[in-house]
Length: 492
Image 1 (tube, rainbow, N blue to C red):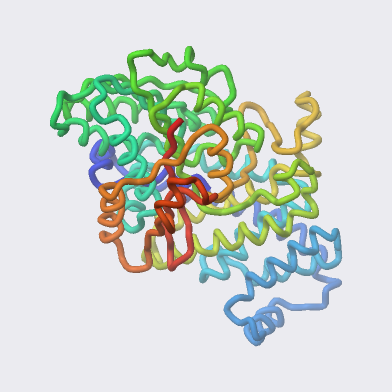
Image 2 (image 1 turned 135 degrees about the vertical axis):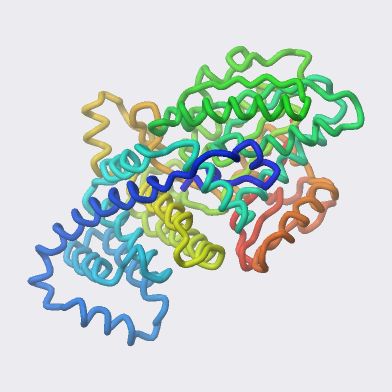
């Protein structure tokens, strides 16, 4: 899920206000999920006659099992193992049980079962890409600036999930570029520019002369979703208006194209980097759909820009199995490992949504629908076997790598990595930057605005960090003591 599409702080939200809301997004995504659910039902109903089990008996069995409230996790893991072992009888039986017990409108267990059932069905039938593209197409037909605006404002009101990274990154960028008269921020993110109004306000209140800011946004939204271009155009106009209001000399450039950091679009020439500018690179949640080789290339691209600082923010989950990380394309054997990590991460996220929003919140429903597509993308798209192989052959894509499945101009799969993995990659070209006490205080102040449950984890020992003796750099946002978002800053 690209949850960073929907996060901002109150000050950042100022340039989003005064638009009408649009609730069609939830309706269309519901239709997309109903289409997929109908397909699952039709497929599974043909096997219920031989199972000899009724829905009532399944529900009764789930209620009396010792694992009680964790029935979804147990059944889902069993189904993932059956798919990995290619046990068709067990697969059909477990999918049918999950189909009987799940509901996108039930409690947390029922919702997890519903959305992961969809991904498991797609994985088992090799229909991941078709399902993901269908769900995305239906959902994106009504995507608009107004619908995104409403979700942004509500999400930032109840959770620091995205604002945490914004505050940390803005603080590091402002300190690295302090005193520079000409600034150039290269934003390779999927945040719809929600990070930058607060930074513009900070620049406007600097004691010295207000610097000139050039913001280059590598637009990874327009090429990936229908209607994305119109959304980005609206955002660009509002950003320019907000900069004039703040009195900051401002220039906005947008580079459209797929999320491929080593492409010709991200050279110094294409980005029009000037020798008299102080450059900062900001990357928030934009590389999780890139293959591992592409991520290595991204770090080299960042280094070639000679930036003063590079800020990286990613959600904390390891969905790259050990075999794939080492270069072995062993997707089937590693599927269970990846599935369990995906389930762990989304269980935390769904529990957070349940506690942060009201039970009838339309915004919560919209975020859950986004999760459903993210889960399919993470588990049923990419890897070995499935409809993407045949489709790529039809499109003449050529031989696939071990790391990614390319489709058209985008990447229809998702492999998240934890902060330790990103730290190892970044240290090949950069040195970690410790967040100052002022930045840490700003993050702590942010968290105090929200209900209990949120926390901040700092580096264990600054001296060790300075000596680069640890693999873990940056800071973590935690939810009930579990790390969920990682933020870091780096210098050449």
